[in-house]
Length: 144
Image (cartoon, rainbow, N blue to C red; front, side, top):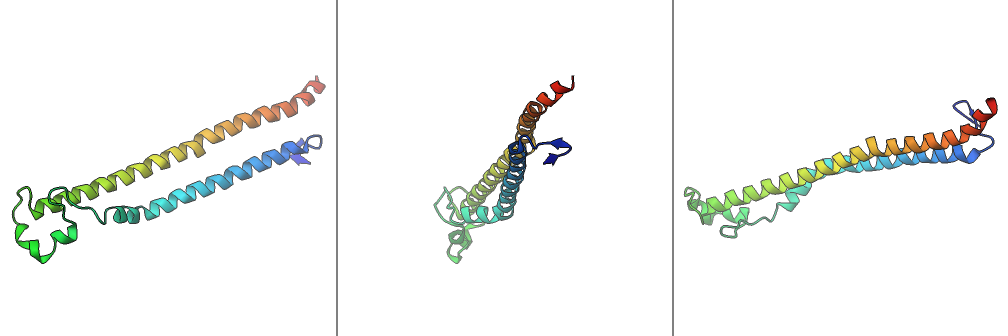
């Protein structure tokens, strides 16, 4: 059995572990990055669902209650404790929820990219170099 010109007939398990590690890395990377893309796609849905039943902290009304016919005559007065201030508070809370979800997604995506694009390949490369050096070392000492 040969891998990139190396004769591994003496230790076929080295080739097997190497192949398993590479395949596992690509499988896990594909699954995690695919899951991140799905979260990114459905993020607006999560935000809308989370902000659907937000009530204002001024009067305690929902957005639908504020926009009903009973409260339309209050919308022209921006004083505290009115329906218009309640709508502004609900909009502020929804923007806060949206910013929070986007921030969490960006932090998760950045950490995942660092793990799969930098940390894991670096560690895997170092271990691979160590194992291949250990495999090649006896054959190098026979040459001299």
